[in-house]
Image (cartoon, rainbow, N blue to C red; front, side, top):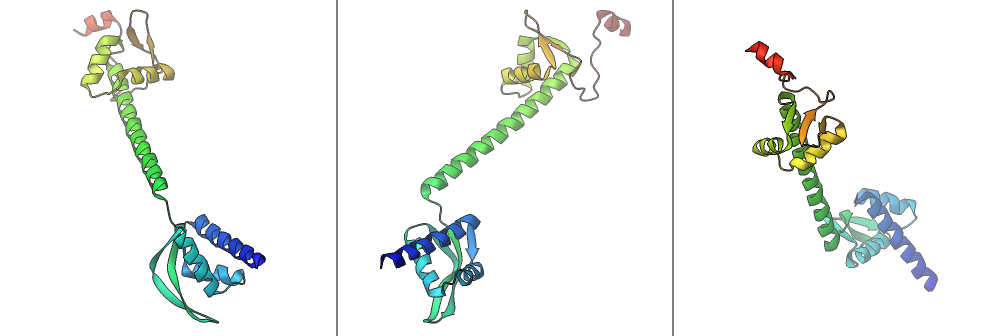
Length: 189
């Protein structure tokens, strides 16, 4: 008697692995698999019911009566892996974290763009003035933006806290900087 139970457990595991690998299978896929594995619809119905009772799968889409040697067997039209509440909670946390990361990334990109645009206009500015102006422009974390600008080589910061744009700084909004020399400013007036 033990070998039959072992074979049944093996079939149960194989059916579950099939469903798990696809996430959801329809009745036609299950019947093809059953035929290929020399199993009948009645055995499939027992296996599916056992998997449902164990909380591993769920049925959807209604049922269909499939003819078997033993008569008609009612089978679900779709079977999918049932996700535990803990796993649902875990997935929701991951999705929430991903959305927060996306939001933070878009704020970072937006802040970086604003800083680059600002530095295109004011190529040399004090760190405090820079921070105040960027915060007024809606940048959340000026320190992160400064670090990123330094990493990219777009700015240098002097010992006295003066931020200077480098030649690597991309040109945006026309890309025209204010003149660097006082003499140039005086010539224009």
